[in-house]
Image 1: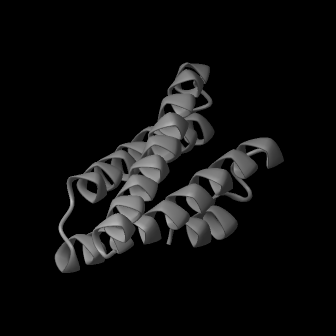
Image 2: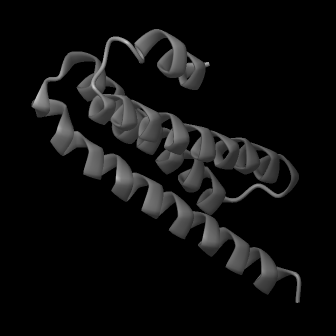
Amino acid sequence: MLGAFAAHGLKAQLSPYLLDVFKTGVQYQGLHSVALIGCGLWARILPSKAVSYAALFFGAGIVCFSGSLYALALTGIKWFGPITPLGGFCFIFGWVALTVAAWRSAEGSK
């Protein structure tokens, strides 16, 4: 929905640069929302602290990374820019936690 909003509702309101910033937020939110759903399914089948941490980091990453990009694009306030890398680190930590969960899961099945 946010992608459609950007394409139709914001196209005339934002500069091409800020529209790209908004679209980047949408792309990363979409990708990590799917990862978050995967974590939920995984935790239901095979509960794991590492999967729970991955989900937590993905959620925090969506809020910090995508949220800061949305805020930057919609308000033009540059102050939101420094928050974006924190979200990026959360995404990285989430993928590392998911990798650890997969590793441990494979170790346990031997």
